[in-house]
Amino acid sequence: MKSTFEDELVCMIPRLKNFAFRLTRNIENSEDLLSETILQSLKNKAKYKDDTNFKGWITTIMKNCFVNNYRRSVRHGIQLELEDVKGNNICTSREIDNKVYLNQILDFINNQDKKLSIPMILFSQGFKYEEISEILGIPLGTVKSRIFIMREKLTKIL
Image (cartoon, rainbow, N blue to C red; front, top):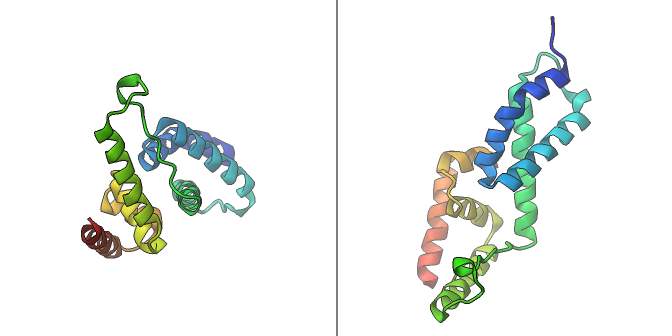
């Protein structure tokens, strides 16, 4: 018996959850990404061909959703969530200085060419070179080169 599109989608949900978490490294964001992926896959159901690798097709949709969301957030500026220290609102002057310094670095990165800044931001979020290459759909050497160039630029301003 041949499985339907919906059956394959339901079977892929646990894998998609894991993949979404690997991309976002945040439970809430991964759930949002999973929902968006499912919605996009259902919208594009007519474009899916039975002889296509479903896992590859659906993970490509998720990757594209992630990259689009990431690019959208970069375009609007990175919203840095500064957590309160030890659960209170009191920050030492050193902590404030560090936050200001971090904001200056982020502003510098955001004002660079997006081809250079996006890989650097992903790298600073803990993604491996291979993951960045996969997410952005560019060669591994290009990822390493762009991160190196941004490190050099950052070193000059620091």
